[in-house]
Amino acid sequence: MNTNLRRALSAALVTALGAGGLAACGGGDGSGGDGDKTVTLVSHDSFVASDEVLAEFTKETGYKVKVVKGGDAGAAVNQAILSKNHPQGDVFFGVDNTLLSRALDKGLFASYEAKGLDRVPGALQLDSSRHRVTPVDYGDICVNYDRAYFADKKLAPPQSFADLVKPEYKNLLVTENVKTSSPGLAFQLGTIAAFGEDGWQDYWKKLKGNGVEVVDGWEQAYNSRFSGSATGRKAKGDKPLVVSYASSPPAEVMGAEPAPEEAPTGVATGTCFRQIEFAGLLSGAKNTEGGKALIDFLVGKKFQEDMPLQMFVNPANQDARLPELFTRYGVKVEKPATLDKERIAEHRDEWIKTWSSLVLK
Image (cartoon, rainbow, N blue to C red; front, side, top):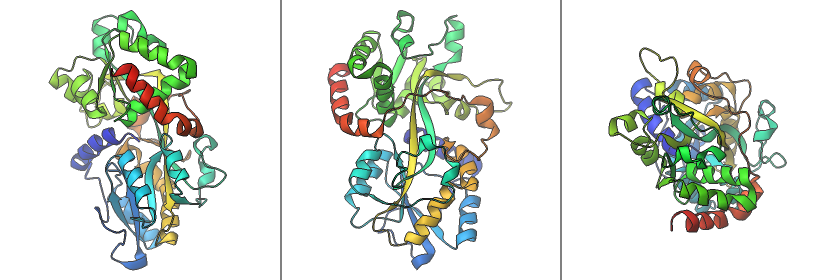
């Protein structure tokens, strides 16, 4: 989930805040080099946690954390599936609800009901009967808009999927390729949730007719094409609408001095699709007790309150407090679009193929 955004933000955080406190990082066979005193977390490239929080885990449990990173979320999940008979580690973090069914169907995870799971809302628990995965965070993929552009044009920014096909927003939107981008796929799933099996294709025909631009991934869309991002403003991006994240506005003002009254970008809250990110105990893990302890810690308050400014996601634990940067500059998406994981599993490849024939031809 949000892999590209978090990769960019995490790099900035490492510089600005000294974040990224990993006991170890890299490839390998999952052995920590310290026997049962090491627990290995397999994840995507954007996993970041502070030194202090991981040190607290070691103090509480005696386990050091080794992190094995495997590219973006899709690549990391695929690699975990391919290596499931000889897992790279003990816990996998980073499978989201768009890919969850694939991991569960392949038997990637062993059942474990985490301590503290009662503090996670039931709506986030998509495997509550078997507890093969534990919700750790969530975020929303939404259209972001450049406030300055719309103020200059004296034009109200769009707020819904339906708005995006109106003539006044012609040639203003850039989105990511559904085939190659997690936010691109989530945006497509949002339109399917909004317009249904019978309507989403017609919607995309209208969106294409209204001049939507499609690029390979989030970094190109947000940093190069979007006029509202810090890099986009420098690069003279000319698209004032972009598919990004509800957490992008707080990221835009992080470290700004003086702090602005509002972020330079806004969120069209009627265009959001919710992504939920999970951790699971890998089947065949060498250190199952350490893995269980780590999953407990990931949903615990200490890690959950550290996570927003490390990875720009929302904590799953309802007792965790959001940082002031989020509460001041973020938005609360009251009614995000969602789809059942079973429905995604059944139709995902078909939907991607159909989208490609409609939009890319």
